[in-house]
Length: 234
Image (spheres, rainbow, N blue to C red):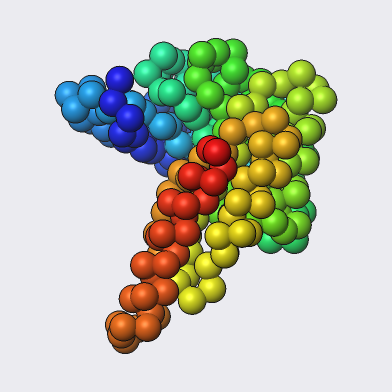
């Protein structure tokens, strides 16, 4: 199988824009491109506070049972539809604030951290051979947020719920990106927690105007990202 991964987007807005009505069209286009080019699929994202079907947030008084049913139905249908075709799923995306507390999403407001457990347990049942990830940004250096991501791993493992990895989005700014040492340290912390880590997205922004200095910074950041994985693999 090709080592190249085609990131497959499954935002709720496009897969279940209306409650109980599922649309696979856009996702199947990406799937067909991956198949034609011998690429593997990393699939993103089953439960995310952003780009939801409008109906999810239109009602603010969901009961706990209703929200459990909504999450179970959505994850089961979407992960089940692509069962066996995604090597990994970003099951829950961006559930944390920068200080390590939970984001006050509609899911968290109704169910608390139970929604994370439910999403992972349901995904494991729907697509048992896929790797299951928690995915977020600003997880590329040790911080309260990276510790909170590790705590999600611990929480799920304590409940006997499958989680295989932590995904780092790596949205960097050239002059303030994590150092090589910081990136290696945080990857080691994830490995110590017993999970894989993956760079699920990568962009290195520079402030305008472009000049030799910020271009050099950008080059260094990309080099450090590559080196961090080399050190981690060693």
